[in-house]
Image 1 (spheres, rainbow, N blue to C red):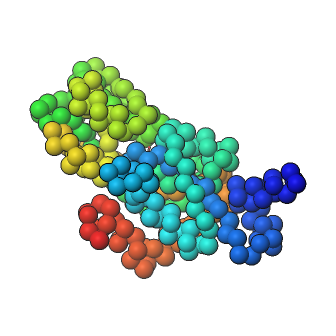
Image 2 (image 1 turned 45 degrees about the horizontal axis):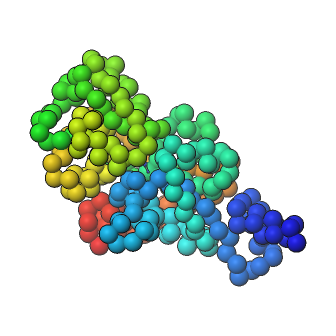
Length: 255
Ligand code: ARG
């Protein structure tokens, strides 16, 4: 009994046994577990006014791909910093979390093709009146722990004197602390910052001009066979207009 149970479980948990499970129950779909960090509207977030469900651009992409490939989808929410470890421990099958493929991450995980490219912005209380990075001299600059924004903050701090970098688990913590004044400004992606600024009219932002653009891609455990299958569907979504439709829906508020 135990054996049967653990076999059934392993079908759910591991895509590695996909072939073995397929023969068992033709009707049953294999469940893929996706990791995300649902603090990142419009990529992934919970609109508490509506429900406790995670929604967003990445969620729609994941559902579309799972649907096309015939998988059931389960979503696990965790801190952004825990996503790569969860992949390397094979606790999840893939990550959709607006994650940027960086050389450091590529040492531990594989990435799909880039599906969206955004810009980095400095978000702050409009009263501060910042207009350029120079204005951040001697200021407290917030970033999400484990994100590429940490690196960018370090680069900025090398150029501009006296910046103190504060790392937080959640973007919502950064926004809260900007509002209370504990943090002077935070580095947040344009599309994500935009939503928070709309919800908090006292906040504003400007764009950081960067050489390295920050694209988003899907992450997999190293060597995962899902990567090629997912890339195929991503390309289909670009070709058939589905990707543009989702970009308009989530980033420009048009259905
Ligand atoms: N693109 C940035 C990175 O990869 C930030 C992503 C943060 N995502 C999130 N769901 N909080 O580091």
